[in-house]
Picture 1 (cartoon, rainbow, N blue to C red):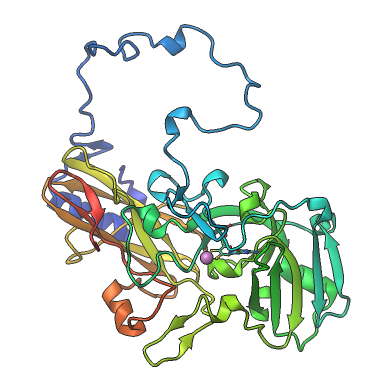
Picture 2 (cartoon, helix red, strand yellow):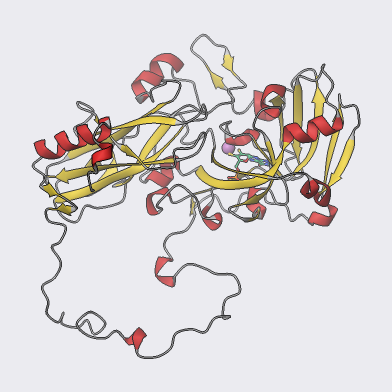
Length: 428
Ligand SMILES: Nc1nc2c(c(=O)[nH]1)N[C@H]1C(S)=C(S)[C@@H](COP(=O)(O)O)O[C@H]1N2
Ligand SMILES: [Mo]
């Protein structure tokens, strides 16, 4: 909240300051009116563990180290779990969403990374896993995991988003996670695919790589060679540890910014070919029927998008006055340039502050200080990426795509706040 002088030229600060002045906020230094309203210094009846008392957990030594060889969250955080639809878990084609409304920062903890699989999660012994590279290749090869680990490694932070997030037809769902929870971000470690291809000798006639997963779905996607020779990675680690089984252990393809489906998990085969495979996943699925009757296929990059995660659907503002509005923005095409937030049903837009680091094809955290006056309000965010692309409203998307699209819905998501502070999906 401190307005440091070196930020004075920043348009975000200027518009924020104007906004705070107009909305009656009192800011001097780091003090925000109303925020210091704690409880007066007196014993709270029935609360033995609250100051000025000494809490019980200070009166005896705590749990000794070693009771947990792999750490888990505090038991008090037991509600922060993957969001799995009640009628889905019994199916092998399933998705579990990240609880984005409960998380801070930009990195998704591995245990809460969203999962989407079409043939269940295979249990793969890494010693028996191989990556076969063949087709239009001078020296076709079969790599063990150890072979791949011998290559120079790289680590990069990138988001991953399913293109059915949410499906286009009806932005249903109550919470940010219900709507946009097929979205996560991690620091990925692996090998540059370009390097592996150069080692094996890619022939000039090769225009696509067909990638196949070692799951029961044998999920297959065709990847344009330009992407394979750009920032594509063969990934074995996620946030410092080996991939989780749900994320493709022991090896996955990572195509930064491309729709989730193309990031083939449990990667076992790459075949260099002159034409795409026209697999099920790129013809019957993950395509959108446009108004002219032509299917939009090979969409590749996810367009710029954002969502307010706090306050968001299912949450409640407990008092009027200062609230921080915060959320996530991302674009498959590069960095987020700006995020605008409206607190008046889209009439006026204020520039939010972007939290560093702002990375290419990664989630970006934004923030806007807000004074809630207790009146009903509709709040929403709008991302702009470095190409200048502006996140559309659903009406704008509809005008271009028509009624029959299914995937690739990057529309603005409005939240309604009622006079009691309850937050709901303004689309439903
Ligand atoms: N082999 C294989 N790869 C796959 C899938 C799959 O079912 N099998 N699902 C795809 C889909 S639809 C998405 S959105 C992402 C999800 O990755 P995640 O489960 O690590 O979040 O993986 C993609 N890669
Ligand atoms: Mo997906």
